[in-house]
Length: 524
Image (tube, rainbow, N blue to C red; front, side):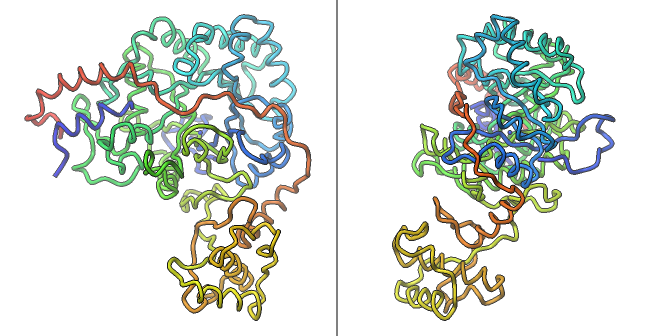
């Protein structure tokens, strides 16, 4: 049986609460238009971040061809030269005052961060600020002047019509959209329309640039207090009875992200703008969080969301309103930012740890194998859950003795000595033996105290043999040089949080209006 009308109403009234294009151009894609892609955003609050040359080589090895940088960094831009990787170059919020106040400053910014690199390093867009209406509202009046100043500077440098052209936009939070479900009733926050949003959309239309939005079904799900089913947030298949229906258009919605995108299109339509596309500059799911406050921030859910997002985009699924148009998206983010303050989840949005090992296994086989983190066939051997200590010790002794596993890294003072317990040491020794034997059947048994896993057991500086083999391949591809770390890697992007205060009254009023329909066939 489908959801009750009242539950459906609550479900989406609370909704408001950043790879390569691998498929040939579809019939519904305009000739010459770039195919939809999935890229990654790169935050830099990371311990031991790769030097620029290594980071560029890591991206190329992982077959990542679209990235978003929050801060311009000349060394990294130089390292990306000739890689074919397309860059969305960020302008930090703290630079908007200068750029919006002076055309000369904007020209100097372009001369410093674009002219020396483009087009050898492909700068596809400039993201001016980030979530300014909620994160830095005091400089909002200068955001449009900054966009116009940078546009003028690009034109003066003959870059506005370069191939590919450099787009200019600003990433906005989804909270600028009110009443997002049904999508057909969504509208922009009226306090921002005349002073900011309408002029912004006109600028985007005139320059053929996208509306950049940071869209997080994770936050919609969490702040709905589970009224939104988690399957809707994770792109999991739904039976027809569980699909949400927009009563005004009769369009069926099977996932939260599509509803968010269509809410943006309807909001633009309400101000008579219909020719601006949507680019998702951030989306993702955290792999770890406070067990009390963020119980759904897990590796399994992060894997499910990001894997399904990738398939959704590369399959060109479109949205119910615009099935012919698929928005590209940047997954937030490449690395876990372990230096970020705040809740546990703040440092756990990455696809990779800072040492280059995957945080979890992406399951994107069938989508072209675009990412080396598609580790479906990468397995490790570790101590089995519940294995008894004496049996583990006996198996450990055999592996490091007659089994000839390499156990040097679990000796005192070495990188995998801590934690100093039999389970941890046995896992390392088991994996060493398993990898040495070429993962042959039976090589991960050890009288029943070992098991095969797809989760990389590496931790901190301790890199397990199975992961080390992958890293050796990566290093061969990277041809790493031990250069000094890049300067200027301090990002001033605000933490991920929705400013919901101006949503609540609108939602409550909408609930009071639509509840009168709760006994009818208003929702199919």
